[in-house]
Length: 209
Length: 209
Image (cartoon, rainbow over all chains, first blue to last red; front, side):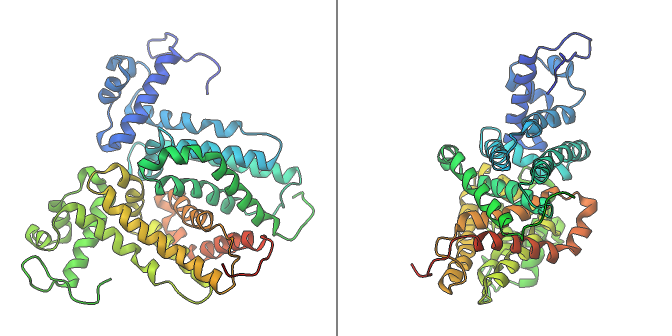
């Protein structure tokens, strides 16, 4: 996410390995216990670092958790294959990995609990808006390339794509997670084909707004 | 849900008004604090009844919570308008009401937390399976009537429909809930039209398995 090395609060450059260990631990702790049990001490213990190492990097547990989850969604902004099918496939696959993978419970909890959590709500809303903008940009570029109709219902398309993935993740009991993981690419492929088929039903129109 | 009056554990008929007050309170408490803070005492206080009134009706907080959430999903099994468009519209509207309405946070929490909650996981899995069967029956009847192709991807269709609703609910910050509530029927209509358009793209085949 950051090209220049970040500094800790004492002004020293941060070790990205330790950063990652702490954010990974934050996802695990939050996934396990939710916001009610989330705290710097539990995260430090999980990461095998001292509490001071966490406090040198993040002002609060709200900042730490938001950044940890946001970093997992960040690659959405980098999707750009010049082809709508490839872009939506990559988006579906990324979201499947996120919601059904090792950090899935944390990602799903954040999706559900964030609005109800003071201190998290506003921070997460900003992150969410930037993810939605990045996903909408995928569709807008496809319209600009003439691949999709300018009247494409962008919100519906992205609700159906992200939502199907979340629903698929929610519907999967833990003992079937490994199978879902194996089947990820097939599911993503069928989902994207299904959604693009709906768009092809639209009466054709010359692209350009 | 029950045609015959239920009895409490002392053998007396239960007052459905009190039952409803307790299950409504259970949804509110669970929505507010999640499983970590859920308990019979908090529910009894919220419902304005004594703890004994709750214990006469439910063996455990796990049973109470599962039944409270299940009762809100139960109407899915009753959807049968003899027309796939009307059926899917009713399903989308019911799910929108459930996930964005007053009990939305409890419904979303259950969707996310249930697998990770011992004592809830198995109970909820059973309820979920009966909901999924009821939703699949809607599509199967449409195939039997010749409205949909026998090769309709049932799981994808229902993942996209339920998922879009959940995503829509998750994306809506509390201050926009009232507007989403007003817009519910329009959103459901557009979503169902979008998904049915995809199915119409399938090459036609004579229905019947």
